[in-house]
Image (cartoon, rainbow, N blue to C red; front, side):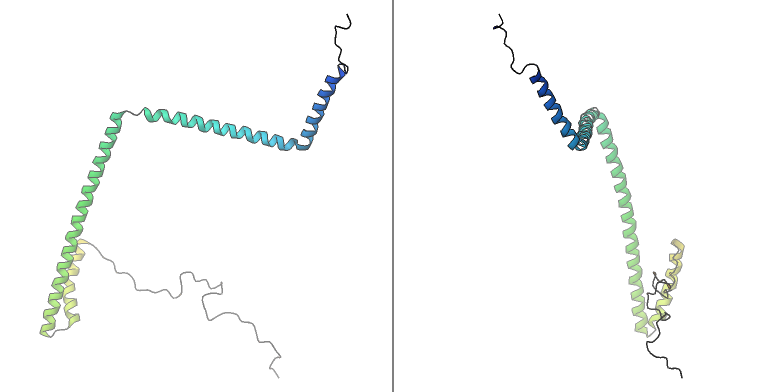
Length: 185
């Protein structure tokens, strides 16, 4: 009957040696590359978390887009069209006002040129006629808008002038003395 039972020549020790060999291999792997493996696992975990959020975000954002009612869309489009028409009407009104102003300015310039031509034909001075013609225009322009003359002041130096920087081409700057013997007696 003893022949029926097959006995492993290595015995139960062979299974234990395989497990010990495996544990030693894993131990040496972790002792050599443990920190790298840990950081790689953390990176993979964070990547999976971010990808899962992105996938949930795309699925969740598609639902509200389809929940918009067609009537609301039509109302929004009509309101947008009405606002555009109102803005276009305002723009057209401003353009008409601008054209009228331009037409009036051209007419004034034409009248000035005619007056200058007539005064030159009569032998009068150009400047006297120009000043005479500008006085009525100045009264008319001051009644509608106030124009302030710009001062004719030029800066003495550039905008970025700094006297302590040594730049700017100033005449007062320190220069080292001459090299050589003194000329004193």
